[in-house]
Each structure stands twice: as structure tokens, then as C-alpha cells.
Length: 377
Length: 103
Image (cartoon, rainbow over the protein chains, first blue to last red):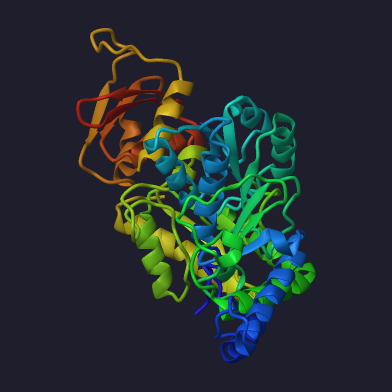
């Protein structure tokens, strides 16, 4: 069954599988202990840290392993806000951040903080000038994703980082969709990423806090991970995540352009094959592996179910799908059709023939569902 | 979901303020009102696409809906189909979206 939902999670990378199995044997002991097996665990953990740091282009002592990408987001945002409380309690976020960022912003707001949301254009991209205008003397932190998780549009991180630096405001970048797939521009202060999205195991995220960035734990005191992340480290998962990230980095020169060409094929052909369809997101400044489109007059859930029946795993930002009754806040912010929405995100190794098969199955599925709804198109 | 409420209010603040008093009509009266209250998207959009042909070109059709997705989908449909989205009227329950047929 072709799996086209890499933006949710990727299957375990073979390099990660091999290292996970050996680290389960060698890295089970408490890395905080001074006896042999403990030192062995510590060594594996710090090697994993150094490998992740090398791929991300940061220092090893700026990298902290968390239990998930979401935990990394929570710690980055709340910890930066807490450390800069004397500067102010104003937080700036883009309208299309991942829900983990927006929910953290809500928490900050209900704790008495203030939040400014920066709108996006039709492609889902933030205007750097609008972002600059949202910054204030009491702004404690600004948040901008590297690329959007639902439509693939890359954000102007380099420009916004420059603006934030000039305003002396730290920038947090949620790099969950880019890490391992695209270069992340420099200039940010904090970053979060998630291991399972690049082919590592679930249960490991990465928090990066650059040197000279003020940060104070929002959680009770704990000595793990340099006092930044509470709880016993998942050493085997960290090792496997590092192995997958490294492997992805090595494969990227070939795999990135290959997947990007497959996405381009979908972007280009779909509107010619099916009437009343809109491919959304930036056609050029985008992630290599992700494309989203909306089909008029079709229920997103029905389309996902129909494609599943045909053997294709894709996701949807439409309402009534799985866990939400509201349409995606990303599609709302962009002002594009929220019903009939499909996100296709290609994992590494996606076959060209699978994409062709998808393109041959999809138009008939859409037409069938439109007929069933009484629409003649 | 307070961040969504916030985003909504931010979006509303960006558009010109609408008169609160319904006594003063904000535009020409619709010649056709489609009642899609209680119907989930895409039904309101399907009804709109089907029935807009019933009004003469240049006239207004209004769609009443209470699925919040319609607030995004009706203007987006108008943009895709080159119809003229006139305004959103707030009802005691849901909204009435006013569209001018252009062709």
C-alpha cells in the first residue's frame, strides 16, 4: 500500500533500525551513573547528540533530547518566555504554526500573557514586514515554523531571524517538517524537531537552545539533559534518531530533488485531470515532499476513505476527519477551500510508478464522490 | 481552541467594520436565499453552485449556513469560480453569505 503521509510520520529508516537494536543492548543503563554500563549509555547518548548537532549545524552542548517534538516545542516556548519575563510577556506567532505552538500560545495567554498572530498570504507564507510590525519592546519571543506542515510552504526564516536579531527578540523555529529534508536557515535562537518525522523512532524529539539564549525551565527541577528536559533519557531512541537524521542528510542530494519532481508532477497534472480542484501552497518555495490540494464539492473524509480503499494512505485538513470538527486553521488562515482537502507527503523511496498510479486513481474517485453528492461537473 | 477564536477576531479586525444594527442594510437585498443551516460543508457550497444560476446576472444570492467552514469556503469558492463575494452577514445562528452572480 503506497504510504503518502510522511508529514505525519515516516517508517523507521533502515539505518535507524540497525542502530536501535544494538543500542537496546548497549544503551539500557542510566547515563547519569558512573559505573561501566552507565558510562556506556552516556557515551552513546553524547555521540547521538554530536551527530544531531553536526547535521543541524550547531554545537553538541546546544542539543537536548526530549520525549517528542511536541515536548521540545513546549519547553522551547515556555522556557524562553519564562526567562524573558522581565522584558515583557508579549509573544508573536504566525497564524499557521503547528497546533503545539498555538496551544502553547493559548496557555501563555490564559496565564496573563499577550499573543499577536501574524497573518499569512494565500500561499500560507508570512510577510517578513508584517512579522516585523508585530514585534514590540515588550516582545519576549517570536515563533516561526521553517515550513508549513499542511501545505509545505517554506517560511522566510532567514529574513525574520534578521528582523528579530535587530529587535533583540529571540526567534523560535519549529523545524519539525524540515529537519532531515531541507536546510534550515541560520539566525534563530531556539529550535524544535521530531525524530519520527525523519525516519527515527517515535518518542524522541530535539530541542536546540543556542548559546547566549536566555532560557529557564518552566517545569520542576530535574537534573537530566543539562537540567533542560526532565525524565530518564531514551538512549536507544536518541541513537536511532541520530542515525536516521545522518542517513537522511546523506541521501538528500539525490532523494530531495527526486521527491520534489514527483510532487511537481502531482501539482502540474492534477488540475488538468480534474475540474474544480485547487492545489494550494507555494509552488516553488516549498518542502520537497509535500503537496496539498482541495477538491470542490467533495467531503475530505469521504475522499480519504475512498483513497484508502484504493490502497493509498493520505491525510486531510478538512473538518469531520478523525479528531476534529473544525477545518484546519492553516487552510482558514490562507483563505482556501477547506473541504475536500488532501495532503500528499511522500516518504523516502516513493516509487515514481506509485505516484502515477495515484494520479490515475484519484480523478475517478473524485468524480464518483461528486456524482454521489448530486454534483454534475 | 482559543487560538482559533483569536485568529478569527484578528481576521475580522483586518476587514472593514460592518454596521452592527441590522436595520441599515449593508448592500442590495438578495433575490434568492439558500437555507443551508444545519448542513455541513461542502453541502452549502454544492447548493450555492447549483442554485446561483437561478438568479439573474448582477443579482445577489445569499447562503445561510452555520458550519464555520463556510466562512472560509464561500469566499474561496467565489474566488475560484470568479463570482463576486459581497459580504458576510452575522445571523443569530450562523451567517448569511451574500454573493453577486457575475456570469
